[in-house]
Length: 202
Image 1 (cartoon, rainbow, N blue to C red):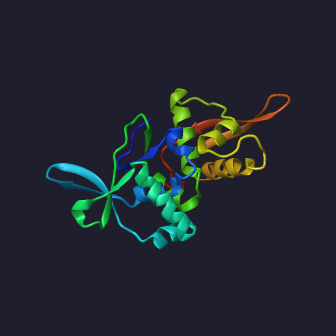
Image 2 (cartoon, rainbow, N blue to C red):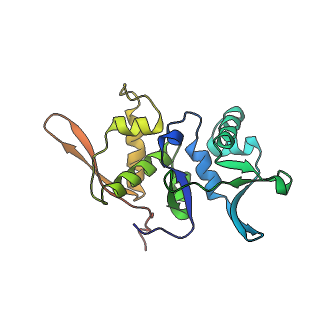
Image 3 (cartoon, rainbow, N blue to C red):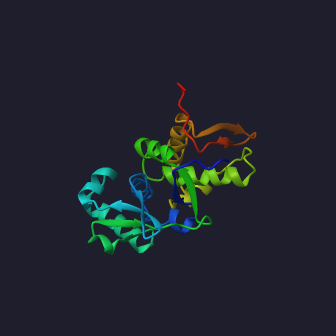
């Protein structure tokens, strides 16, 4: 799969994705609105400081919730305060390829605009399973997907969270899927995962 220009890093391991305080939508928003700057020959990515209320408005959450999620990104080392700029911006730290996937900017922007929390992490899970499977179809279970995002997998009450996300990912052209019946149970089969949102008019 070709790596697209201007891609952004998104965590792909459960140390992050299953962490109850890790908000993938907030982190993806930060990545989407970050920019690159070179200082003394060193290139880094930065994100201009926002108020907690502004972040809350982005997430559709309370100020208290947004504050907790943002501070947790600092605790995880995903971002850090840029002391050289009088605390007016944050540095977005580079992650090792073993713990993060590269998502094209356009794809990230469209997911952020269309989806809710957990969607980014579900997409990352499917993308990496597809690549690991030689870009061939595979069948993830609801339990696997629930475990990856850290929600209960012992109850079917939250099945719709996964199903709704898969439906939206399919609608915007990031996955192709089908339901497969084995004689006793219906399984989800992922036929293809793309890292580019294609323009149907183009």
